[in-house]
Image 1 (spheres, rainbow, N blue to C red):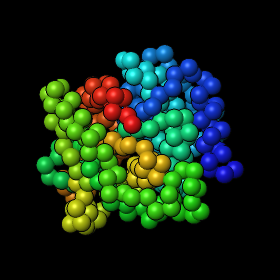
Image 2 (cartoon, one colour):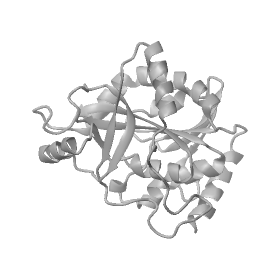
Image 3 (tube, helix red, strand yellow):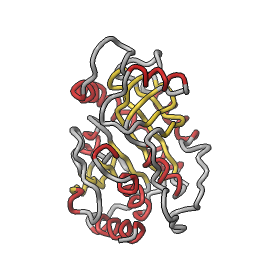
Image 4 (cartoon, rainbow, N blue to C red):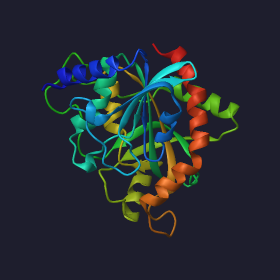
Length: 277
């Protein structure tokens, strides 16, 4: 089935399950999915029930689409995403962004768990992504271009909205939170990086490293959706501290910071709703 047709079918199924028509989509990464549990007037749809929708296999990714309200703001929230390292193609990884667009979503907030490279970050820090470096060796736009989604060669100069980052910084200050900003490097995974690889990433300008997000951002910008992306530094990257890395540490840190992370999302959403084009 063509991607456009599949995305349209998935979007129509989701919209039939709810009266809400959100303009903002959320992708909630490792250990951060509990925000969707707080949404009111919610319809909860397992990915398995959505046509062609890829199913999460990673620990900490519930695998549900939740359409509900944060305060007065209707949102579509993904509890978990899929990754290239699970064996999915870049088109499958980006497919939820295609579905969002067909649902009428015009802005997305992407979250992830990341390893900290920048020495100014500490475990548990929240970082606004200002740019990315795609080292995953692929791109969701490879292959024939569907002009109904966007142009063949989309501009990525401002992949991450400056206006949205400013809104997040404002709300962070109001909440007494310190929000950092940095460049996210995407690696294929699932093995964590070696200390030598982390040193290389530092040299080329990366502040964070992870295994997600960039394919989603590329697809979102292909469709002219505005993007805010926030990383939770759940561990310091290999070689930064003299200790081994584990996914358990990622989950524990996500649990520890989820209240402040969710407070930031609740504060940002009304302002993004007003700023949605």
